[in-house]
Length: 355
Picture 1 (tube, rainbow, N blue to C red):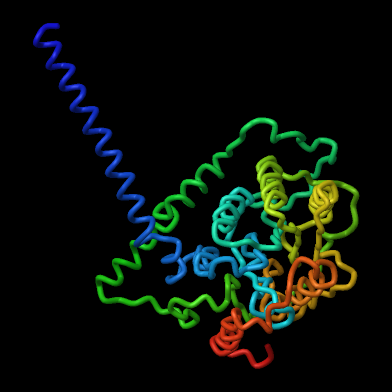
Picture 2 (picture 1 turned 90 degrees about the horizontal axis):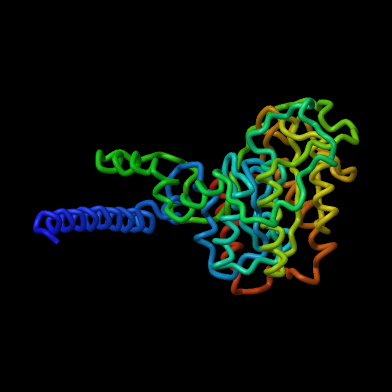
């Protein structure tokens, strides 16, 4: 081999080592940032859309019986401290705006590293995340894609969410703004925040009241608006994950006037029935009454605290009546006395006169 060729090979090797070294340093830097400045626990200490979703990282290991997964509908409707006060169940809500089933699957895998829940509650509104309510899109249930899990499948959405979940720096990059504000001597004000506190366990409190009016979305039809392909795939994965970990899965729909219909209800009920999963649709329950004058905080999409109390009470009663053999009342257990403190903090911070 001539001298010129040797120099070219040496130059190529050196260039390759530099590229590999740069990539390694970059990955290490991303990992360090993800477990320090941009960690999931840090996400719970400043205002951002994932603040409540990642509250589960602050829960003591193996203390949570019920995990709630969903989008903003769920974090507006399930009140863990009330579920504790009325039934003695420990729970946490893992939800964020526009959360998807693929993100829920990734989150549940992470939760199970530290918790051994008895129940997982899925809020079904996220099953159609990003799809506007449109009667023209209703199709026959016979068209539903079947046997999707016989081959490996990773959606673009799941791949993005998996990367963000593994490296929170990509998820929480807006924290740079908060850091910059700190260097400038500015502090973010949020009167409802209690530093390093997890007293609301993922619930997002709202006391606003907006009067709404019922519409025809839930009028009976035997039509079925099929579940999106990604939803079927990751819902199946969540179902399997729960079965493999002896977790009772339950699907619910909290009341919403803007994004739910009887056709969507039919699709979810079919999936639930086929997989022996209990399904509570508060838009259709005969023994639950929505107060359209008082229970919503916006145009009918999200519950306020008054509506959330009703939802939480119903879920607590349902679980006690049907699953008291797998979940216990811990109110007399001194190891869980901190939940009583959380209730007191909740009442004090939100100035609740009638809990």
